[in-house]
Image (spheres, rainbow, N blue to C red):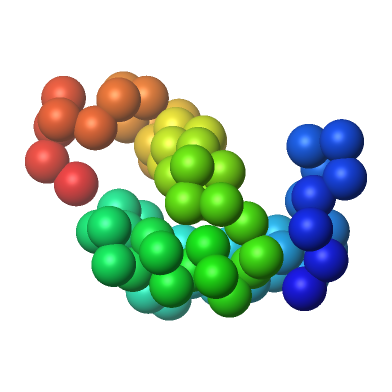
Length: 73
């Protein structure tokens, strides 16, 4: 997979991240995060940030508070 250029993710990276978000977990543990990061060619920090932002977007779309913990998922 291509690495990020100027903070932009490639289509392949976004596809892999979305697939993991939708089919695997919305809240990856450290091991899962490491595996997803390796699959996408991203750092664990970049992957964690993507999941954090994606979760906020998902929660907003679902009409939930942006932060986890306000209501049960």
